[in-house]
Image (cartoon, rainbow, N blue to C red; front, side, top):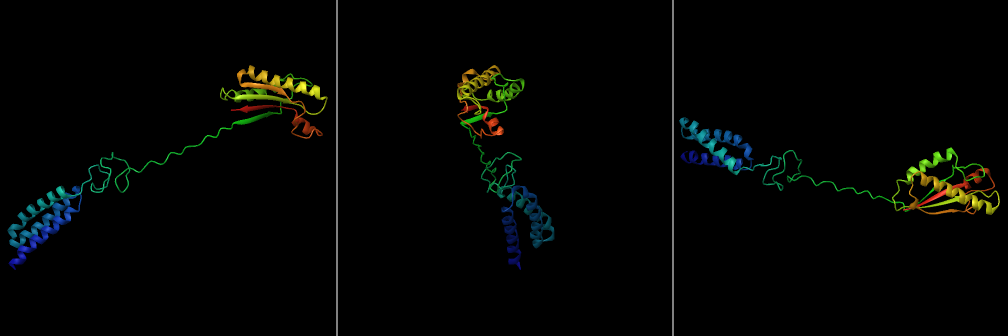
Length: 231
């Protein structure tokens, strides 16, 4: 019986300290409480008078052991220091199982596709009859195009070409297409499009139809001014 009285306290004390070693430092009150109960049991094996002393002694030892040997969490991120690969994480920062902030998502770089060449086809500028003079309605429509062209880079190159339908003589249509191309260009320049952006202003007469000249609708499509933008 004396051997049991000697061995049992050692077994209980060892069990308490071993269990406390796996806890965190903040769990020292739990260690102290369990140690106190164990200490009371150890003291009671000697005498009931020793139960209180045993509770105080072993409880204090268990709490201190837990504080010294316990696994802490210095930065308070919920990951024990023994597993925390990123100590000192600022408070409130979300961390992974290793105590490290998750890697930021890879930046998505949107590739800007620059159209090197574009052609604006102006078909709803009709001019006055048999003339290259712009009407008030024509100017209103060209104002919208001027606003857009002014947003182009200063290095953009503009090529203006005038076109007619096949009605009339070729020589006449050639001159008329040239005049209309210049009328459009002059108005765009007066509206603020830099003159230096225009590298050519030409007339093609009826030589480049885009529709059938045998129909009224086709001829209307062929009467046009084109602005080619090279960026």
